[in-house]
Image 1: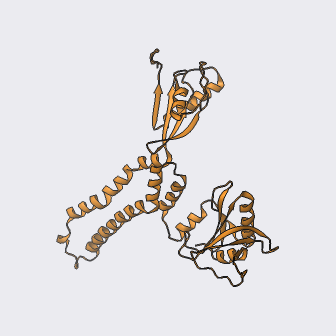
Image 2: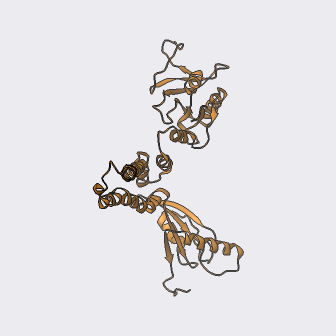
Image 3: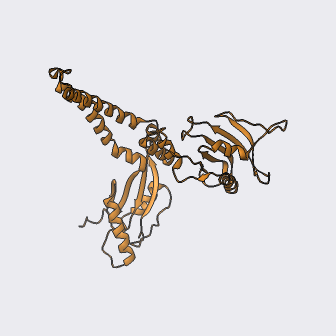
Length: 322
C-alpha cells in the first residue's frame, strides 16, 4: 500500500483535441479542486463540492496569480470505484504540449509526485483491483495493432486467464483438503470412501487439461500480441526487396541490379487476416570481403534463426547451393 499522490499525462504525446492529466492518491480531490474553477452562468464559483463520477465544465487557473490556463472538463472518482481503487481526478484539457505541461506543473506544485511508467496500473494491482495477468492485458490492449490482438487483450483484461487459473487452484485446494483430512482425522474420515480414481479424474479434468490448454495457446497468444516474425531471405539479387515492396504495397526497400544493395535489416509491420506481421528484408546470403556487407549477412542469419516463418527465395535459373 502507498500513501502518496501521483500524477501524469495519461494520453499520448503530441497535439490533439483532448489531453488528460490523471491524479491518484489520498489528496487527489483536494489537489484537483485547488486548480479547478467551475463555469457557472451566474458567476457563482464558491463552495463547489463535486459528485463522484460526474463531469464538470470549467477552467484550470493558476492559484497563485489567478490566470486562466485552459477550458477543461473535471471528474473526481471516489475510492474504491476508480482504476487504482484510490481517489482519482482526471482533468481533460486541450492536448497542446504547452497546455499539458503547464497543468501538470501546477499539479506537481500542489504536492503530487510524477508517476513512474505504469504506476497507475501497478497501484491497481497492489490495491487488488486486477491481478498480474490483467495488468499484462492492459499493456497488450494499449499496444494492440489489429482487431484480433485487441480482442485477445480485452479478454485478458476481463480476467479470462485469471478465471481459468482460479478454477484449477480451487480444485487443487479441495483435493488437498480431502487428502489432509483423511491423514489427520482418520477416525472421522473413512479411507474406503476415498475414491482415488475419481480424484485422478478431477485432477485431469479440472487441473491438468486447463493448464495444458493455456500452454498450448501460448505461442498463438504471443503471435497475436507481438506479431508473426517473417523474414525474407536468400542469395543476393533473387528478388527479396522486390517481394518486400510488393507485400507492403510501397517502395520501402531499394531495388537495383547490383548485388548487395541491401546491407542491413529492414523491418515493417503489416496485418494479414487480423494477424500482425513483422516483415524483415535481409542482406543477400553469401561470402563477402566487404566488412559492411559481412555484418549485414551475419545479422540476416541471426534474424533467420529467430524467425517464425522464413520466406526463402531462389532464382529459378540458378541451382540451390550449400
